[in-house]
Length: 153
Image (cartoon, rainbow, N blue to C red; front, side):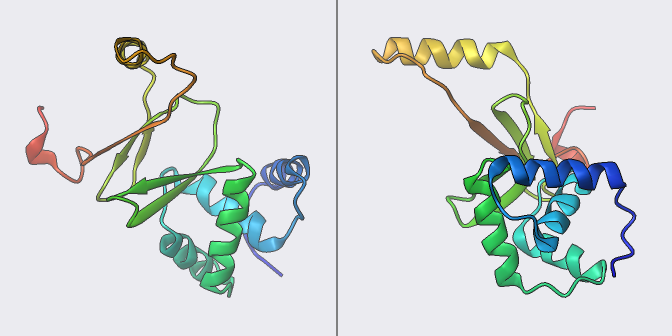
């Protein structure tokens, strides 16, 4: 039996989320969601796997990947592709801005709500003869902690 400190209401909310998505409620999926929610940043599959092991859950890495794919397909989590698809980070989906700022070193994730971005993208589309229907942007950078010498004080 798990000795996780995950609040019961959060686990119930995750169970409801899985039910709404029409997928089975399994311990690996609940644990995966818990890890992502508690991390406070986007994680790689291997980081999620390490968190499972640290919590005493012996879940094969292949199970992590299968569940990440399933949760991504249902929109419960986002997959953020970095380095020309050679690295992926995962985070729980939110109704936040479609613009994400991700630290390439530590995976810290920041949702950017800046109306100038939407205006610029709309203008670029209009200039090219397109009508913007939606967008998702991932900006890759190094956060202040990972690259303190490169940021203004």
